[in-house]
Length: 159
Length: 381
Image 1: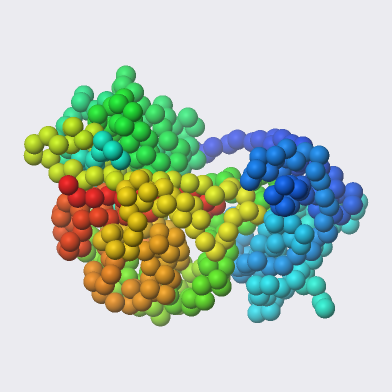
Image 2: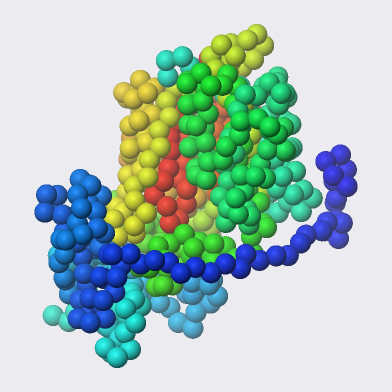
């Protein structure tokens, strides 16, 4: 069986099942460690600022992607507040399996930065809109692990 | 390009939802055999070989090692581009323009039906510290883009559905396409939501296949009896890997790629000088977004186009059926678009031939979560 004579039934073909079992320990790096420590200890977002370009990076980076300056000594902290830049409502989990309920996932521009964070928003799919002001809800201090998952979700800021 | 670089041969396997009869290496062998015949050459004459592959889509690490034999490239110069198909084509142009090679084979393939966990492959493409732990399905990233795009342009969701209707209808005329269908806007909008506003039918379905292009120097291309299609300009760019930094509503990588390709091709008025386009439509909104970035049609004009005849009007787009109609095959997608554009310019596109197709543009994108794409301008002899 091959190029000259092709199979015409599924029971004539064979496959081999295998997986790709690999694990990693990702180095979080200078910026990642500072971000994690600031979130865990003070419940704030650590960002880096390039004075020359007037840009604040979140997630923080120790370099400016515009002028290539070293930003490893140029930190600011901002609260978990921002505006929904875009959003989607998903009926499935990240694994592709159906979810119990609809989830609102948004990309949130964080105030005082040019960056932002991807997160879930505790709001009904009918009520969410682009431009909605939201704030992050953190895990209680004792339960924080120093990871982005310490931000449990975002919720609308009631004016 | 000063000296000139041409596409001299094209070989493809028809895009199919599954391909249980051949392994991915055998698919490549089939495409390569066709390409060598089409170019009137044989592997011994090829000076250098380029393979497009991405380890996670292969299911093999260091896939480079598995590319030479089915191309006839054993003990010859060969390298892999883990990137977009047009980045591979650009590498071929560099080999030729630098005088290293006169004849180059560029290969792209996709055996997506081998992959049992597409979502897990996607998740591994997100930043492991800031993005992956949030747990977001892949289509949600596209949905976030689509929402922002509709918000910024003011287009209705039906405009996106119109792209699906057009491309799947065009695919009915293309014997290489797997997903030709007669659909209505209403049917598209009634398909299930993957992640609002993105629906199942807004998304191009996967397909298996392989493409080999034979690229030649001007001297080699001008030999008697051949039909060269000239690569007049090529560009590629990456915006940023960070979700936090991207423009969300705009295809900035295409704007930059198009500027580079148009400058090289000497095109100053793309709307007048380009006759047809094969444009990435991995998700239907992407076609509209890319056409705007290519300075070919405004979102409103592009929407209007989908309502009219497929091959009339100012600019036929994806006469092949695009990825929505032909099937999506990751980084090989761009090479299928180049193959289709080559046949259009040769006048060999059969019942989906665009009349007077002398200059065409191909626009590619690497899919979520990337902001990488390319643009190439192709022209008749």
